Image (cartoon, rainbow, N blue to C red; front, side, top):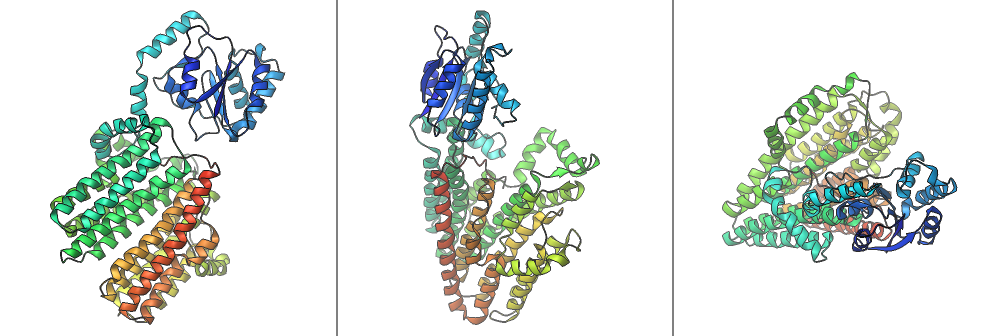
Length: 609
């Protein structure tokens, strides 16, 4: 239950009471600041409370944005201020001080606005939503009231709400082929009481059915799979638009939306591979390669953003990055914006390509196109980010270094070596971390690829990889290119599993490897979403229990050396099941507990890739 306290003199014919009730508020009225303070104290501390001027004139959606968004402890628009439980103490303190000071002597006549001024004076962070053309005002006289009412009538509240439901920055396919009608589907869902999480689940089920259709290996199955994959993407857009349309944000919802996106795409890869196998074409290596490449692309995005989102520039000259200047110049030319968004193959373009190629070609051709497109996109985005990092000097924070260390997913071996190298690492150049990580990763993957399956050399290379991994993280990851360390680790681990499974040359080894990489990738995505939600990294016991990236890499090379190819396949399957069970159980426990515990609501706007 939410409570709104109306303050000031009521205005005949005003719709404010009906509007607040429509937004789910229980109404109370206060004739002065003292009575408002008393009513505020009576509202239970675990409920949302709002102070609203009775003379308020504005759109209902302006009130909705200002008073119902669950992401912010304190929020305000002209004439109204609201607090969730986390912001209640600050609101109560400001109210008490305003009341004891005799607020009527201030220049601000509205009590809600005076409280907002007091909160600002305290340095309290109060969210003020962008209203755009929406009206929110407290008119001082009848003429101003009539003008405000006319301004409300001149703007279509619902049209603004529908437009704002669409993500501000999206890909070409999503913007022009999906959002023009998915926003209306979002409104349809809202009017029937459906939640974003329900739509997210429907999108997942649709994608799984699409994967099952692809797994039939028939032309009809492939056509149905392509159609259903597009339908799943429509629902995927709809859940976010529904969240923005109805302001139904939650920690659990953001996690479900993000993880289900990955589950849908990678399940579809598996379905395509199964369908190809039914037709006599083994493309499991291509399917696993596509998953490895796409996951590494995402880790590049995550690591770069975490390393730079709170970095501070060093000096005025460092702000003038030639790469950033060129990017800004290109953004000033309209068509280049869309071209640049398309060539990175974001989720809309990628899924559309997969759906069309599935329907009209073969799984092998689909995977070839996907690998070529994603490889080009990865090279383009990574090269641009490397250039930005080299040309823009910045000081990275301890928080950024900690996030990169968490994304590295170092296990006991790497951490032990890191501790041993800590003093020596201080004397090494700033590019040491990504360089030694890359050398160690290349060594283990190439050794597995170039030596006979079952030989001891991959084990030696994996031990060297554990050593270089420890050296890479022996000091805080604050160097200009240290954000490359986590994606290099991902590529090394996943690549080693792929190569050894392919070298085993036994039926079922590559599907087992696909399952293992999927389970480990889920753990890595889960780490990202926890960091994004300011929930910290997964617990240390979880990382230790599944070995860290270097421990799993070493274990897989040992299994390949000690077991026959058939036994290796079984071992990979067992390892995949064990890792999946551990990380899934802990992940679900954490996110459900966070949701029930009232964790701050968030909304994931999705990945550019």
